[in-house]
Image 1: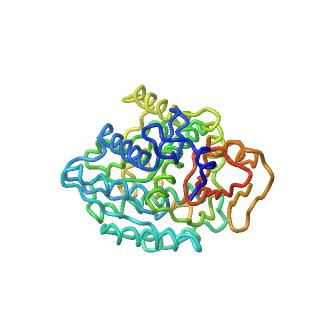
Image 2: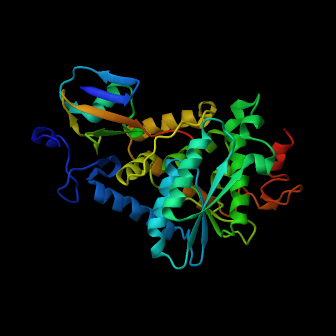
Image 3: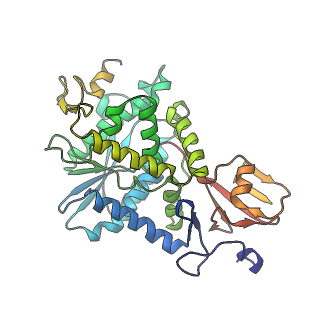
Length: 309
Length: 64
């Protein structure tokens, strides 16, 4: 129990008289635990509704690594489930084969799905591609995140197809999405910047949705702590090779000094997408000449990668 | 003032009462990359921390 003197140092919720647990700097608002939880759930529901991410009868496969973002995603979707008509959730976990790291997050994913009573599928790189990520990365560790990203995306699609999913939901948060916008700009990759795999696919691929794309990483962690779902998990041993790590640190500093920067980046991306719709910059969807998967070039990323192994 | 970053990293120092974000920045910690609690209760980053306070800092950003 805090003393009276200490209590006075903590701001009060802007919506009630409870002690605040967060300060939302970009709108200058304090919220208590109850109002913050309701605010996050409202914002996620609003993103899903506004962007028409989930439709009646959908079978939504949730990419569940067991880390904080995917854990929050599954919890939030489970809570919002009664608001949708006949929608089902399935969880899919990918075991890339990263020794000393993935075992713990997979256990966390298993516990969560058992607790929530959600069907759970696990796909391993070894089962799908013949070897672990650790083995594929020998001598090329600096490419870890791009290689893992390509193979993990393919594994998730296979898992979603096997589970009969109509949507594939991932836990990308606002920080991830804003970082991706900047990274694509830094690389001069406009086609990737405006690529959208969430909409109408004419049956060529399972649409991917990102319900947490407007929720910051800090808000996600706070939501988990307030709802007794926070787990201290190890950091992926390959992250220090990633360009994303540098961009994350830079952008996080900008966001602190200029609140709203990440949301503004996302607004810019959406505007650019609108302006470029139907233009020559938008790459038409093609089929990989080796495996037939949808892609933007002659070969898909997985087949291109396989040739380098 | 006692900042607990982990079992291996506990920082104890003298400080006059100050907003939490100022103290974090002085320790080269971006307030957006951590969550801070006192006696198990989460604290907004503009909470005033006093010299006798003990706060726990949890880093949130990691890949995976």
